[in-house]
Amino acid sequence: MQSDRLMLRGRLLTFTAEPFGAEDTAAYTYIEDGALLIENGMIAGRGEFSELIGDAAGAEIVDHRPHLLMAGFIDTHIHFPQVQVIASWGAQLLDWLNTYTFPEETRFSDDDHAAAMACRFFDLLTNHGTTTAVAYCSVHKGSAEAYFEEAEQRNMRVIGGKVLMDRNAPDGLHDTPQSGYDDTKDLIAKWHGKGRASYAITPRFAITSTPEQMDMARALVREHPDCFVQTHLSENKYEIAYTLELYPEARDYLDVYQRYGLLSDKMLLGHSIHLEPREVAVMAETGSRPVFCPTSNLFLGSGLFNEEKMRQKGIVSAIATDIGAGTSYSMLQTLNEGYKILQLQDQKLHPLRAFHWMTRGNAVALGMEEKIGTLDAGTEADVVVLNSKATDAMALRMERASNLSEELFILQMLGDDRAVEEVYIAGQAQKSGRRPAAIPAF
Ligand code: GUN
Ligand code: ZN
Image (cartoon, rainbow, N blue to C red; front, side):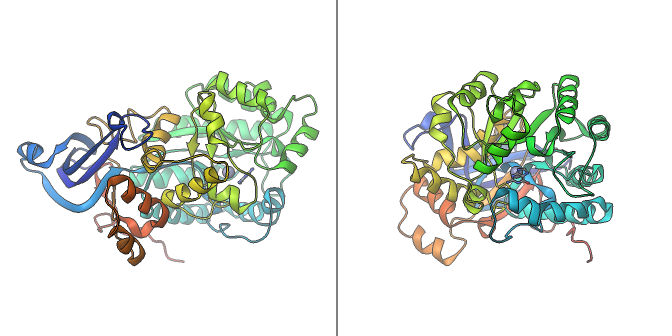
């Protein structure tokens, strides 16, 4: 982390709770002429610029007015080895995996390829304003090494894990129950808690793991209760039917994971679309977190995530891109499509709630709100600077916007990486060239 002091000036927005509308002012802080003081990669103070300037002795002051300063975005479900799968035509989940995704992931047996892709992956994330990712790596241990190494170089807070998968995938994309266990143990020992990294034990989904591998996953979770766990649940109707064929004793899809002791508030369940009432009740009981992946769910024709049902049961949902089935790296665009999925079900997503969701909301889902997701003093200085007039369409629409909520909605509907003026990771600017461009030669 850099040791110098930095003060950012701009319109500052941060959340202390989930807001349900603009009038819910206790849930958020908006300061028209605000400032953040950053020291050693951490937020040391925030407030009115006129008040904080007195503490700024020796600090470099970067004036981002009239742009918005917010906590960096958090993407809670993304597949790092799918950067060259995004935008593959014409299939639903199982065909899409077999036709495009599995063949592409086999290429990550090559460590050089994995390292090159990791570099491009993190460039894409930061350019889109995402400062924390929760990623699936490929089955190869080296892909997780590449992911964590690249994140470490950039000092990014990340979560990730190599996928466990020992069946129903092509040659070159299998582990075994024992090798998956051993590789995961090694990776946890090396990376979990190192710098800003955390490990996620990652059985890909029930279809690609034998019961023997699920037993090993159970052992890993028991031996490492502080690691995250991530998998996929009830994304597609054919996937559910096949899962229940493979695990005939399971009462429903979630029961596969439940039987193997994988459920807790560390569990991230990608998609969670087609759920039985029992599954929703078990998610609530265990504190497991469903992860809504809007662009992916539309792209693969998977179905509509029922956010309201989760909320009514007290379940904390996260939101994510799910690249490469997802079609945008932008969390703004993810919320754009998320808004429309809720519209189709007569549910409403207020823009303040949307912006909370991809920052503090996702941090809460990860149990990390003391570290990331807000602009509170004492948290890590991952900050995004947003330009609401980044494109002609946005600037024109902004002429008729009269309050913060409208502005946020314009960003959510029309914004993408072009709206991301600057990104700070642990206080280090990423776009203005302070970090040397890390594009490898191809
Ligand atoms: N289910 C199992 N693997 C995957 C994957 O890579 N992407 C999506 N969307 N669903 C999955
Ligand atoms: Zn996924």
